[in-house]
Image (tube, rainbow, N blue to C red):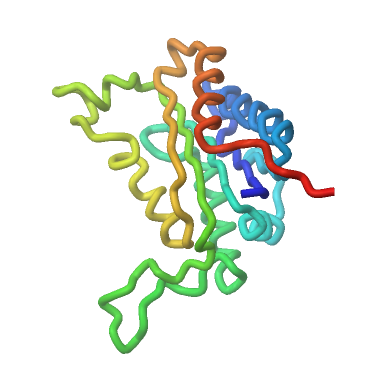
Length: 201
């Protein structure tokens, strides 16, 4: 993996300023550039060109999504971004169709993606504590983030041909955030997957 596209899905709304996910992206820039990777970024809160965003997705070997979770869903500007960019990518290298044929429309749904061989990392940040997902009798009924609220997000990526490399979830960020500790945890998480690239001269 040489080319990394980092997408910040957070943005300011009501009492959420979007600082934590912006901080993650900023730490990525230092981390990956120091290791010799090529990096491109997008903030969904800023103006973007859909055609250029499609090209970023096609260029990347790895896509890193950083997003807060609002009301158990993606923030509305992040969802809008995905709707616009993935639709723009139809027949332009993101996906051709849903994978089915008219001769047998019952099978092969979700196999029309064109980004095979590329991977993604997802991080999410929550007000909910980790225990809300793990303990019996707590709110999420012992269902994980990935198998529960983010199941559809992972299927979206599979639909366009991407493979999940890893996920990392940050809990209790709104009320009890320890940002230095969480950033250290994130760096250790990245260290499991990345090394210094050999730069040819």
